Length: 452
Ligand code: ADP
Ligand code: MG
Image 1 (cartoon, rainbow, N blue to C red):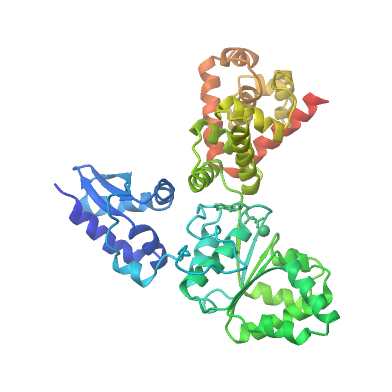
Image 2: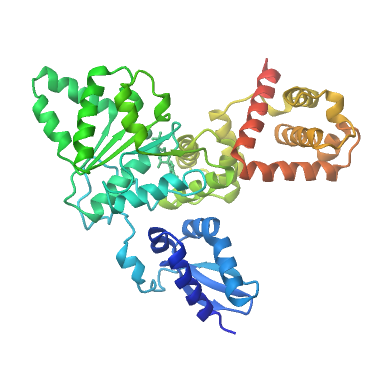
């Protein structure tokens, strides 16, 4: 049985169920390659694309095929060889082209970094909503989410996304007037304008735009006069249905010393946030970065970086850069050991062997309101089992003890129990950023105490 017919039907149904922009982006780039009675093989443009597609749409694809065929059909993906021609652009694609700047054919926007595109922004649970809103805005600025307020902690991709929006609008419509400005520059420019009695020019500049992108507006805190000016600019643009986008390191209601009426305007718009990415996503981001840079690194090295650098994406990239620079400088191959060594320099902690098992047990027990003997004991309630597994995981991570030795320290448990615990915690960490942060905090406390 050839499943191509079913695949075509699935596509035409999905087209009505999925957001048109998303459909054009993900489904128009798929090409049916072959099928067996149990499996459909599709080609995709890149490994990153595949990872994203699998994460976001695979379950939907599978259930659609199950619905249509009454059988369980799995999917396989092949990265399209450059020599295989891409599929003919689907209808949807010509309606909604993928908003990525077309390098070379158009002049780039002078204020925007060309490397910040929607195409190379890795999309996952932590930023999905903000991303899809940005894509929607790029196709119809001023008319959908206006104003748009994007917030998130340092290094989580605010500047990348807001500039990608600018790049996308620019590539779709070169005539659109787009201004990107960090709040700090807006402040300085305004103060200079006052000094030079050039306020009118300033006003003209900022009120004559189609898209105004202001980055890091928490820098406007305490700037009363500038807030006044921003408020007026905002009203002029808003009334003229021009797009306004702000980024901030916190949600509007947490901005301090901000004019009330400006705040209420901000809150009236659409608000989206960027969260910390999970372990899996960090790995995808690293893979995407090395692909862009044309670098090759062993998977084990990338996994190590993704596992150790949990703070934000900027730090993740910095660690990657440092490791690559080191390898290049010394003409050394980047092995797991080299990477470990370099990461230690960035995230220095006390030597691992100096962490005693009983310290780990004590810290983990305390943090969970248990006694050490509970932790080592036989009770298997969830309240004890999870902290016990966490303690085993941390010991395995920080020390050289074998699983057999660790088992002995937990009331003579078998080494397979320890292996199972480690696996379980690893899996949980991969998918639950909040849990990961808790474990990392414990590790930090343990290292601090072991070092002092
Ligand atoms: P912020 O402005 O929130 O402090 P940036 O936008 O400067 O953060 O992001 C820091 C770095 O991380 C940039 O190099 C950016 O390209 C990268 N980055 C952030 N989020 C992503 C993402 N989702 N996919 C790919 N790269 C990202
Ligand atoms: Mg920024």
